[in-house]
Each structure stands twice: as C-alpha cells, then as structure tokens.
Image 1 (cartoon, rainbow, N blue to C red):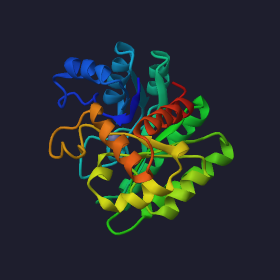
Image 2: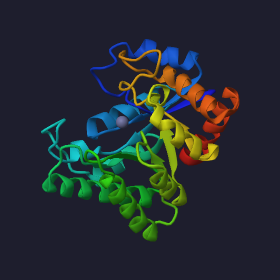
Image 3: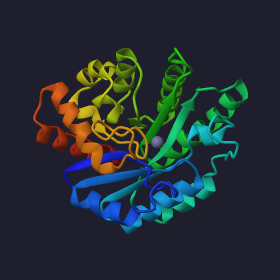
Length: 268
Ligand SMILES: [Zn+2]
C-alpha cells in the first residue's frame, strides 16, 4: 500500500452499506486503513474488518462522548478491561487504543469526570499492553482546555509507562500545543480540513515530516473537491497532496514517509 488513512470509521454500521465495494476500491487505490472504535460495538466491528481485509487494521476503545452523557448520545459505556482484553486475543491486527481523550464541547463537570475515568482506564490499558493511543481532543469553545488537560494526563502516565506514545487525531490546537505533544514523542495527524481551512497551514509547516500522519476521519470532513459528500479512505490522497504542497515536498516522498511513520508507531 502506498497511502495510509490512520483514522477512519468504516466500522460505523449505518454509514457504509456498500462496505465491500468500498473496501475493494480502497485496496485498488493502494490505501491502507485503520478503523477506530468508539465503544464496544464499533471496536468489535473494527476488529472484524481488520480480520477480513489485509489492508485494514483496528484501534479499539471508548470515545469520550460515549463515556459521558453528551451532545451526541445518552447511551454511555464504562471502559471494561475484560471486554477489551478478550478482544485483543481475537486479532493480531489491533494496533492501538482509542479513540480516547477529552471532548469538552457542551460538557458539564459530571461528564468531564466520567471522561477522565474512561481516559485513565485506557491509558492504563495501553501502557499494560504496550500499545499506542489514538487521542481525540476537543476543547470548549474559544479555549484549549481539553488540550491542556490531556497533556497533563499524558505526562502523568508517562511516569508509569515511559514508552507511552500515540497520535493526536484531528489536531486543532496551537503551534505551542503541537510542540508539547511532539516533545512527549507523539505524532500529529491531519484530516481533509487542511485542504480548505487556511488556519492549518502553519501547523502543517511546523510538524516535522517524521511525526506527520494522514487521516480522513471518514465518514466526516471530506476534503476538497469532495466537500459535503460522505468521506472515504481513498480521499486521504488529497490530504497527502496538501501536506506535500504546504511543505513544498514531492507527494510520493510524503506518502512514503507517512507510511514509514505509521509502520513505526503502529507496528504494521
Ligand atoms: Zn474518530
């Protein structure tokens, strides 16, 4: 595979009724995919896809908005170590834990507490199993509060698990926050938003190529020229193209380096 989409949700049952066709297209386009769990059901589905398709991998865990009552759902879960331990046994293509972290968009103190409990459990689980974490971080409007709290958590858990690293998915913080994650050994991934939101240029420029990752966050945020459509992993090529353009590098070299980064971080 030439490209890799390190964060997609082909495991969302209602969004991809044409999954078989799409999986084939993704493979034909030479795009490897990591499907990300957001709870028990979607994690299990991500693992099934990884076991079914050579070019797919899975990350399993609990999204903060499914760990607390939120704008998205009332049906919440706790992170069940036993469930995820058993899941790990079913595949050698589980390459990380998450997506986990903090989502403070319309979130009260009780919800924050539940998110913290789930996040701590997953940092522990990742550390124990020597797996990287896929971080989801969304701050309350006009602040970077969730980024600050995440950095604090990572620093705390690195004392216990010095090798703990991962990827900051859909990064939307400042250059200073990006640098703090880089200093902790983390990678930073960019989505299709970089193809249409000029505010990302400076960030893409500053993250070194050997820490840069590409993702689509499918089915969300399709890049230009597919805006408004359902997103799919093949569109990760537009993200790679934009990174190459901003960094003034050859697209093939960028694709190659990102694949190398993914191999290193996820052991694939
Ligand atoms: Zn996601």
